[in-house]
Image (tube, rainbow, N blue to C red; front, side, top):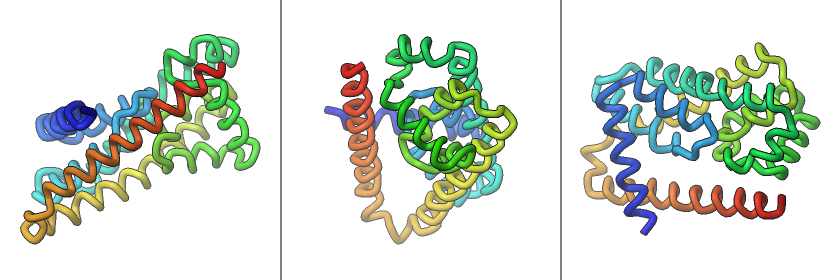
Length: 206
């Protein structure tokens, strides 16, 4: 059943990137950074595929992804910054952020300091909601958004590169290309189920 949901989602992602180019990449990555589990693992490799076809620049695609992450982090950061911990603890469930997420973010920052924001931007799932706790913790804006950009840029380069290599070998991979689509869908399903289960479990505990 979930594949009937995620396949149209992936087709929609591909349609947006095809129609809007780098702006589409930035838009979709901004959505992902607004606490919405839109898979960058589907957005950026497809951009890389377009790069392999000469329809988008490699660096342009990666930078568009990083810029989108920064733009998408702005509203979440400032909701946390001005709303504070009390606000997010009360209303965080509407952003799929639980008290456990806030506690985990505290631990990351206690252990790694500002570098936690850089590291988290290169981790699946965690990267989606880290901006809200960063705002609550009153992370220094310049440092936070710089590390957000740099961590997201590395993440973007890696996934765009994966898409480029797949696109360059498409003729050799035609027989297994559909299977690769299935792998993406299965990965998205697993991440989606884990994300929802983890967050709703913690939200119930709140």
